[in-house]
Length: 106
Image (cartoon, rainbow, N blue to C red):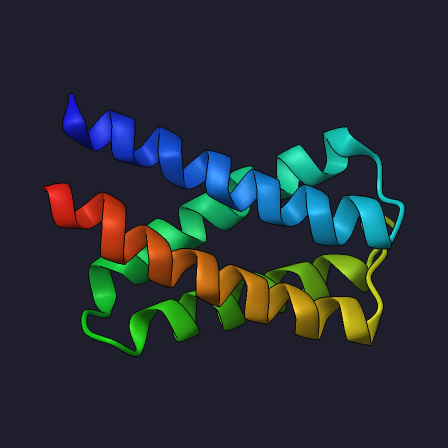
């Protein structure tokens, strides 16, 4: 049960950061950002199992940003360079707080 709750909290975290940066700043529709957040969650969980330690949130932030960049090369998503940089920073900081507070209770 705890794993499902942690997964839900992580999806909410990814969705909030994605809606803020990709939805608000780059005017992407919310449904596209929600679909992106699902793929980012899968990528994030994969990286979470592969990397441990203090560098993992940075790797997760950069990988989520690279996924957004790859999707911005298609007509599916719009993203500017400045938004991607801000998204990488926001995502990494959010993941750091997630690891510090939510995973600590595990």
